Image 1: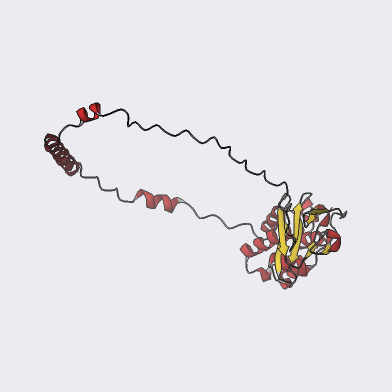
Image 2: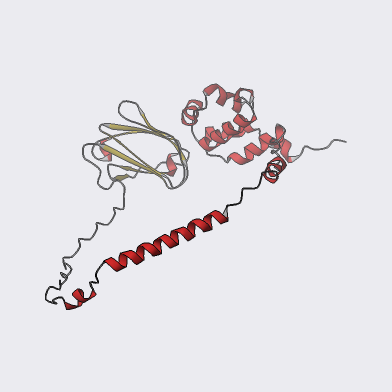
Length: 266
């Protein structure tokens, strides 16, 4: 009589899940390595369920989370699967020694209230004596104030009635007034997250990473902006203040390039 496998035995391995998610997102190992800063040999090893190159359980969990976010899958189930297959997380340090240290700490010294009271009495006596002698030497000026002329009363000037210029309302778009001497590209992840790579005309990286749903990035260059969109269907694209109406599909990888002028020029 044979016993069937449990559901945990039938689920795909961590490396298989990450590899399938990467392929579904249309990303290569090199692109994932560039966006996550995880070296290419380590990415290959993790997709083959070899975690010996990670340098320990802590680094392995971190790499799993980083790669999962880059390819658009949930990291926590994979980390839990890793813990179950590799002995779980280390036990937390007990807090008893910390409380013991607090218990045996010496009590603070009590303040010397006697000395404080003596100092306060001396200060009060000195202030009263100083006020008494000073009051006897100075003539009273109350009569002079009462007998003074009333014609010198200063009339305050009325406040200016000049209307205040209203502040301009903020623009609905961060690139509504795009400069004419530059190319301006705005990406908005309105339908989901997407891996993004943006470079200037010299090939220098402007951004390389994952754009989460609801996030927005804006890039400028004096000549050209080159883009790679890992999940193009989730992106709204604005070039030089105008929305690009191309119908990108979910999971589609698009390589685009835009220059100064209308989006059609790019």
